[in-house]
Structures are given as structure tokens and as C-alpha cells.
Image (tube, rainbow, N blue to C red):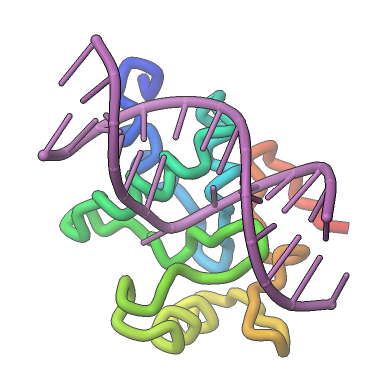
Length: 112
DNA sequence: GGTTTGACCCGTT
DNA sequence: CAACGGGCCAAAC
């Protein structure tokens, strides 16, 4: 299972199973892996994540709902457009509506 | 095996 | 409300 795989592998697996129209935070991924403090390491795994894996890294955002740096996706607007196309709701601030689009690993389908 | 780094998070000023 | 600093973890050099 995932526990037998290296940290990066676990991160990739978790990111790969993010449903469309939903987003997740680095801290949430780290916490799901058992290390709530390893949020930075998760980001590191993303940075080293080969695009060949087809990881929806655009669905991974920080705690504030802010997307990754621009050079990563060749433009922040591009990533935002991709997410919107998947059903992710954006606020007027340019941030993601975490209240609705934050993916819950607990299976909780009730945001409110 | 120690040092550096990083797409982070939280508390304090 | 915005800015700054510290901390924590895992991989690469």
C-alpha cells in the first residue's frame, strides 16, 4: 500500500486521486500522510513531480487558496482557467473558494 | 552524515 | 489588516 512507498510516492498517489472540481492544500496532504508539519515536503514533491505522471498539481493549493507560482504553470491565469473549467469556484480576490472546493479525505460531503 | 533548499503553516509584531 | 520570522519535515548535494 501507500505506506510502503516513499513520501513522494504517497504524495503523488494522493494528488492523483483528487476528484475534478476539488482542490486540496499542502497541509491537508501532509496531514493525510501522517505528517501535518511536512507541508513543505509535499510542495517539494510537487516541484519534483514529473508531469509525465499526469498529476493534477493545479488542484493543489496552499492554505490561503492561492495557486502555485506563475512560472510553474506558465501563467497563473492558465491554472485558474483550468480549475474553473473543472468546476472550482474562485473568489473575487483571485483565490479559490475553499469552503466549497476543498476536498475532504474524510468523505464528508457536507461543506456547511 | 551534515548542510541547503523548498509550489508551506502558524504565531507574533 | 499587512508584514516578518521561526519552525518543521523530507529529499538532494
